[in-house]
Length: 330
Ligand SMILES: NC(=O)c1ccc[n+]([C@@H]2O[C@H](COP(=O)([O-])OP(=O)(O)OC[C@H]3O[C@@H](n4cnc5c(N)ncnc54)[C@H](O)[C@@H]3O)[C@@H](O)[C@H]2O)c1
Image (tube, rainbow, N blue to C red; front, side, top):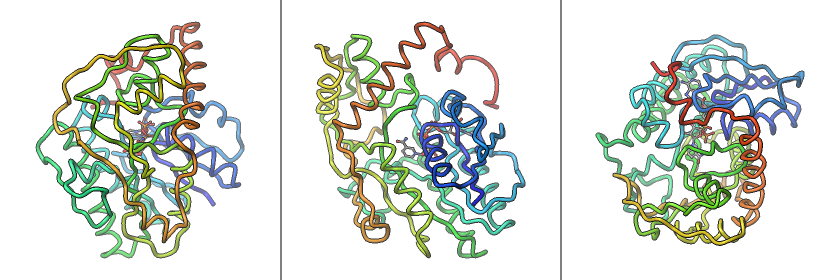
């Protein structure tokens, strides 16, 4: 099949590209390179089945494709809050443009939604039937509400026009090719530990998250896309719950050495608990995560070790430096 991945040069999108190419599909990778990196897909540029398009999903596009994975959207608070209106646009206009395309060419379309649609949940763990507790005017709303509207658009295009939709509610995912300065807790801790810096814990460190290794997540996305007639949202994440303090201890154990901890206040609307109920993914897709946290951290730490070494040699601009330079963010 010919498969479009929007946000294909990002963390998850690049792993999904690897997987689909390995299965013999053709991949059209579309990205505006806001948070995506050429580095992530360099190894694919000479692959005969791989095509790269620099494009912004907020603009319409016409392509002949059989499937669309709509991943284009900055995923970490530092990035999605950098230009909140643009984040809303990417979620709303971007999803709309992809749905128009899907309808026009009869493609099946999967939306990368998020556990953030549950906000700071009152139900724990979160099943797909839970409608969430989201602050619609807070600093995270551009992402949370943007993704909720994306789900609404998907559902309306399915009801009104019969578009063959899939909705994946993705929980915290980690692995190689995460950006190192994006404020996500796993990459933050790993980079700080590798640099011998104190790990920054927000709040008491007792808030919980579950962490899914990227290969497991990609497997869930591919299974969901392939499943017939599954138009309702499906949680994809690892149900094993850790406190942030436990995560910090695991990271220090894998990196080695001794590292202290600095405490900072919890950001506004930061959820205190997050754990997926994955019964639906188990029943519908026969899916569950395989890799345990320690093994996943070993692979991720190895990636960051190499990446930091290369950065030291090449003086590549950091993400923070890139974020302060003009381009792409109107
Ligand atoms: N990583 C996670 O833990 C997680 C959790 C829940 C949901 N998700 C969702 O999965 C998707 C991929 O996330 P990721 O972790 O790979 O993040 P990422 O930032 O690495 O990837 C997002 C990609 O989308 C691109 N992009 C952003 N806005 C765009 C636009 N307007 N037009 C074209 N390209 C654009 C970026 O350049 C980047 O390559 C996102 O939609 C995110 O919301 C991720």
